[in-house]
Length: 143
Image 1 (cartoon, rainbow, N blue to C red):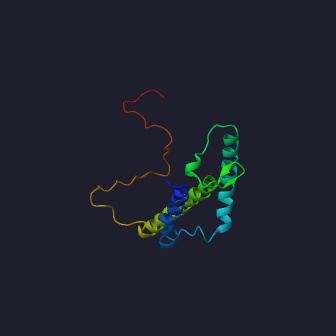
Image 2 (tube, one colour):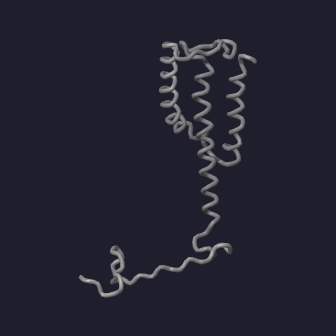
């Protein structure tokens, strides 16, 4: 295993989700201020979490699998993870939203019902009837 394998994996994640920006018009990279507002809290909180956990020896990183570049006691790979994974999640979220919007636009209100389901009867109510109480039973009960 290479010390750069994890960074290559993070690069692959970015490359795999890049078509979401290009073909599904996720428009994440175009809104860099919004992306920063979404990423910065995640990066800050989880980097602080990791720095404390590493300092307290709750977890360690095997030097064989990291590049050796550290920001304080935080390996570079961990910082890259906190940037790449939320970015890929944003791309996925926006792409799904784009696809769902397109699907909603294609289905028109008032279109014919599907053939495999029977039509639903229309509910008719009279304006003078109250519908918030249960119907009275037959048989002339006491009032």
